[in-house]
Length: 289
Length: 265
Image 1 (cartoon, each protein chain N blue to C red):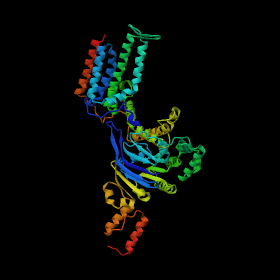
Image 2: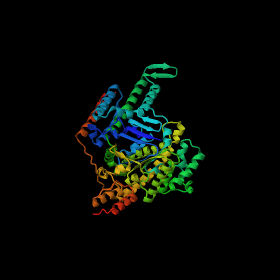
Image 3: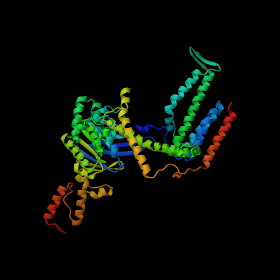
Image 4: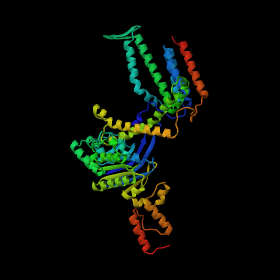
């Protein structure tokens, strides 16, 4: 499902003394199958953009197109349910949304709200649980008896069980240990490829953005500062540093190396493997200082 | 969703009323609530009205916000008016239609009592619109200090109040967040049959309760870790200062009281 935002503006508490512009002039295209990373500081408007992706917020100016649906201000926006079924959002700390007595009931809550039969929903619950790396034995447990990491996975399973076409992830790994972080990110990536999903990842982690995304959008003070492929974005690392943003470790290493050897590699490498073979080749050619 | 809750909300604009000491504002409100009962004829109600609108003018709070405060109670006011209208007997019979009888006294009482309501709401919402909750708590704590002699836990009460006030925005944010998360999972909070909507509250309330308890525990631990040992000998970060304007305002209210006593019938 294609999503496109054109010149979207959103004001919180419009027409009160508390009015505040959260985002303005935001235009982003997300064709089906794109893995897009949305990067920016806290308060840069990432989360506001994210909430437009399934019409939780309606723009105060501009248009959001989600598949066939066009969402604008000053109009009755109908059939938002359809949109919401197609776009699954994993919010920050999704474990806070758990409420049912058992894990199974919580996972089937979403699908059943969208009219999936109980039998089908239960089958999906089992599948989703497997995807997030949990065993079926916890289906009958109370979600509140689980560990933090398990709760997070159950909450994610609850979104996956809705079988969305678009997956929106708001820092899905915040607060997890490095291993859990890796597992979950890999899981989302596999799913993205297997189901040809569109994935939108809001993150602080440049490493994740460089590793998984096809497109990166950098936001600052409610505006889109930069967009492009990871290679484009990270090819001018100093610019990012000036904006107070991090660059991936690999890129930082390449920068230092180039300075030290006063050479310039042909492009920015985003994985250790690629960079090391590039460096090996360079050294093989006999460039020394 | 939470944006519409304007009742009891501080409007940050510079005005004489905003700059007043919360103690004087509280004293004035308490007195006002008492003296409004002195009014019992048109002159005295006119005085009260004059005073109320003068205060509203001084506060510079846009009318929109006052209306926001009035809206939820307007039905109550109307109901009181009708109750008085139909059930007070006395004076000439004005209107008679079967079982419905309306007397002069009924109209008078109905109008007076709903006006009293109206002014009370205006003045009290003026307090919350021009005073931050934390100022109100500070003011209350200082004003209630004498009650300590009677072993009334003034400090604890003020602490409880400021903690709950402090967490209202947090709780609202959290409500908003969980609401959105559940809407994304297909819950309809704003439409559908009433029975479904009541059921929709469960996925909202349970997570809220869970996180509130967790937060309360964390707060208690954090306070203990930072050496909190109750109010004994504790100094204040925010100092209240009583200024000329406060004296003037209390004076104005005293004058109003005297006028009311003179003109009441």
